[in-house]
Structures are given as C-alpha cells and as structure tokens.
Image (tube, rainbow, N blue to C red):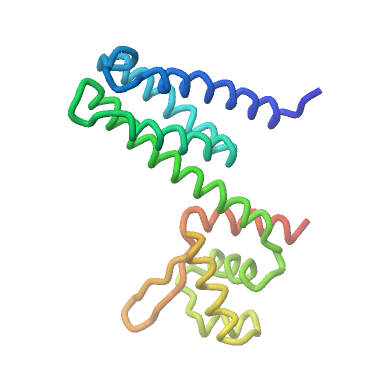
Length: 190
C-alpha cells in the first residue's frame, strides 16, 4: 500500500504529463492553445498544479515543470498567435521557479539541527522580535562572530530580516521564519 505522499506525487506526475503534453503540442502557430479561453483554462489548471507541487515541496516535479516551461518559452512567439500563452508560460515558469526555491529551502530547514546556533537564534528572534545582535550574544552565551554567521545564513534562507528602529538594528523573523521557528521549537522539545 502506498503512503499518502506517494499517491500525491504520482498524482502530480500524472498532472504534469497532462499539462506538459498539451504545451508540447503547441508549436507556436496557436492551433492547440491559441484561443484566449483555452489559454486561460490551461493556465488556471497549471497554476493549481504548481501550488500543489509547491505545498508538497515536490522538488523533482517542480524542477521538471520549470524545464518544460522554459523550453516552451523558446518555441512561443510573444508577437504571434501564441502571445497570450507565451505571457502565461513566462509567469508560470517564474512561479514554479519560486516554488522550487522554497521547496529546496524546506529541505535545508528540515536538515537543520534544532540545537544548532542558527536554530536557537531563530527561535529566540521569534520569541523576542527586534532583539539586537548584542542581546542574542548575551542570551545564547556565544561569540558575536557565531551570531553574525548564523544571522547571515538565516537571512539568506529568507527566515530572518534585520531592521533599523532609531539607532538600534533588531532582528525579526519573516512569516516563513515564524513557521520554521515553531517547527524547530517543537522538534527541540520532542
């Protein structure tokens, strides 16, 4: 018997095959997906597929989608009968790429040790918004260089931001950082 995630992935793979085959049939002359209503229905279906794949963090299918959409952009003419389709494909490719980036970031976060300096810093910043680096150093009893490295890594992953309020620079968790901090805190307490 398959697990739920396996069934979902298989469903995503079937969905990818369906929408990708329609796109591959379109050579650029507008005979397959050239009508506005057809393009809109197709783009709507692909949008939902991308959201599902992103929510499941299905990196293989998202990567395949990005490649299929990228190849299609090269075939389609932004001035010809497939202009609307070309615009939709470019937009969908960007959304799929963003979903792929997020899915890859989730893999990094899942591998993060909840007792690491970075995880402890993220949890602390979540619990105490606008905490300064000096306060983090004191609370975590570590060196400033460690907080600098951890802060940079967490910022690059889109989990923390550093803002200036008056003369002080404080750390804040992004919306994604809040979710990750909660997951890490749960893992640390388990």
